[in-house]
Image 1 (cartoon, helix red, strand yellow):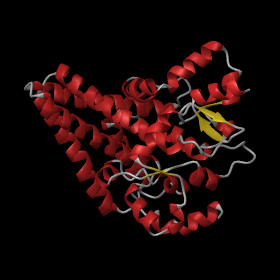
Image 2 (cartoon, helix red, strand yellow):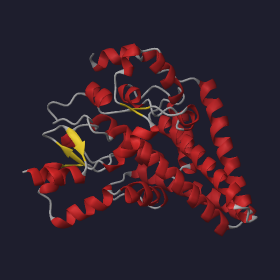
Image 3 (cartoon, rainbow, N blue to C red):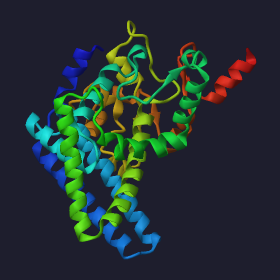
Image 4 (cartoon, rainbow, N blue to C red):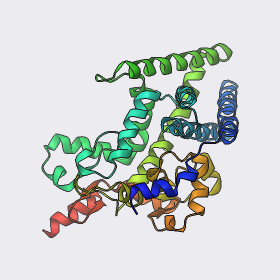
Length: 333
């Protein structure tokens, strides 16, 4: 089925609903603020880690959910008004340490290029082909191996991105992007100042950074699983197809109900890539009402874990493989 036909068939689900959006703001942003505040109180009172850690994890979970609302706003799909999407997205971006305009720009590119071998690099996780890796200088191989190491990719990189890199405008950033960075940074400072006056700046920074570290790691993991699996779709530019990239290049991440809700149904990622105008609160019902969406790569919490060890795209096999598999192939040759 062509892209135009899919858009027609999914049109009824791509309708924002103000009531549902308001409910999500109340059941997402409000609990996040409460949990963050509770985390700060427990930390300041030197409460036992047995109580503090679950609250920190819950706070991080709701931070991930706030980011999903932010994500919808960047697609202008959360509510009907573009202006409200931009305003709400900017607010959600402050709470998730992400500037609205730059992220919207990069993510739009991601949607238009995912699975395209010639257009990798913007809004994607760095993925080299076997040929590119074999022909690279030794130092680039070292850098790539460090980057694709799970400890770096899901531990060091996420907090570095959200805490540091998202604060700094890029060299090619335009005026609107610079403004978005500055508004987000100012908002973060204001929130930090408020919490610092209630508790202390030191306590706020420690608790906020721990929460951000957990949430950003979870967020990067979700993004990784959605596009990094053995039989993932990658094609040359002339053969690339939008629909195939969505249905063959994205997973259905089947999560337990509570995690599905916390992650804003982003696990229905194949549907999201077919039509990014579908709000998160309509993704699940869209899946249930369309049997043809079941014939896609489905992963679970358990089956997703080994995918963290895939690092290279083998163009001959048309599959993602690990460094270990590549080494075995070289021995056989």
